[in-house]
Image 1 (cartoon, rainbow, N blue to C red):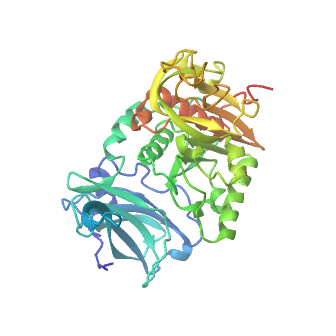
Image 2: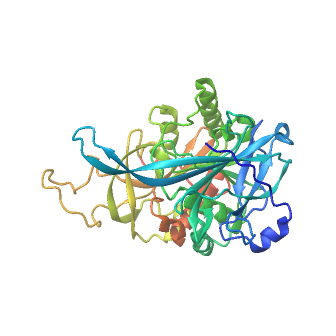
Image 3: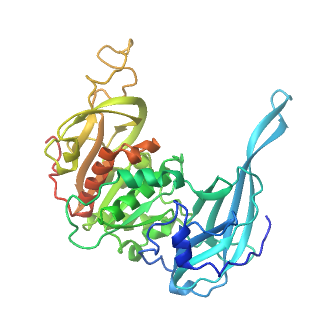
Length: 430
């Protein structure tokens, strides 16, 4: 670990940053929520200086953090090759490993603002940077969510930098229904298991969608403490963006259970939750989570499929105009507690029209099938207490998030979860 002292470039104004920002710049300009007690929220807003290591963050700080002697941790990770002896054969082999270096930038935050800083020189051209606010001292502890930056054109930019334009063009121009009040959505992006590369793409798509359609404001975060009851209460819905692993990953078991209860109470009290793709490949040991979402991941045996419109009368399916369609993605299938008796299915795989080879070992089955009832739902809604749940399995491939029809489906599903779009949500079967 190395420790750098890097001065902030105060001369670059916020207005200048807005005028020259890269396409991955945070479109909100200001974070539209208060952070958890004793913590901060940060968002990317690329800096403007000719220096390729200049970068800016926008932030919001809890009152207790204002003026504190904090630090911005810059974690530099690159892939290197080393030659090591195979323990079984004794032969020398080349293997890749992550090489990590950390630097720390002094930070005394105001209540909110933008800070332009100079990043340390990367240890390699392929280095990625992770930025987070941490405590001062020799054993820094995280106090915020994390921003991950990737090398592009000599700069370090957000993962979605090259795709923002495509998502902006594809997102709907207006909401399907006008919100009954100003709405806020928390997009949660923590991956404690397999990290899908589409997570930052999907998160930004939800943010752009809400902003362009004037349907909601968005905060994107991987900080589990956003689920503290007082913090979560600011929002009208949560989007679980391909979250994986056992939520929330907090070492303090009591705190972890408190955050879990907070989410369940949030939805059951009348708020909404939505899930994209791997939101169902998550928290298998948390039964209430699976019950709330309506199923757990069983596999992804299919790629190109034919999609059936199960509920053509649903306003969430209006974009499809009752016309089934072909699509390619990593296609999830589901296991218990999935049941058509528990949720209203919007879309599913039409196995009869999907080009799959017959399974020679199982007459009447196609290769890859893992359900005896041949029921492969892709999108659904359901009530949960007084609240609402929307789930859509599409979201592995990046291009899903600039597919106009799928984005409209997501918008309408989000508006249902928020409580603005009314849709019949009785189970598909009694």
